[in-house]
Image (cartoon, rainbow, N blue to C red; front, side, top):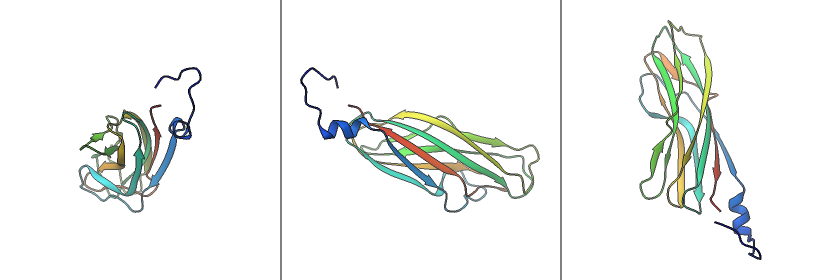
Length: 150
């Protein structure tokens, strides 16, 4: 939207101009041997009032081998919304072990920016993939910022 001289600035426009922040954290571990599965407890719901809002996400993953492993472990956010909108971040938080053993722990993160579709209700979750003898543990989290178009 382009503003012109003399145009009234409404509360609705001001509300859209302010980015909204959300946070969610894991409530239990994502266990071993899972592929593209939601990390328990990490879910953020929000509603947009305009088409094409921007969603910026930052996430951390606590990667925890429970026994000896060399498997890769990863996670990334996924967003579902109106009109069958479904998009996953192209960036992953990834850990690869070189003979990782039980007791080794890494907390790693990443970030992503995406453009959403139609106005409406969205839910963003953190999807994880774990190998044998690995889990994504507590202290994993997701922060999201929604910026509407004005």
